[in-house]
Image (tube, rainbow, N blue to C red; front, side):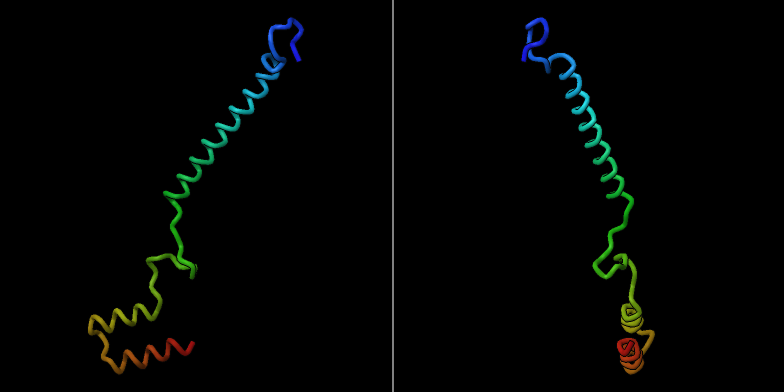
Length: 87
């Protein structure tokens, strides 16, 4: 419908201000969400499906590293590996 002075649609007056405010809220909301996503990406460490962070080592990993460094012999490695896998 036309406004009281027949110079345009009613949305040109108060209605235009209402939709302008909604657009402003929408734009600010998107900016805030992008900022939060950026902070999360920068400061939250990713986790693998097992729930551990990627840099943690299981006892079996530590045992394999000790064997690779020559700190334990083959028989000792196999015995400890079997002990760990029984759990």
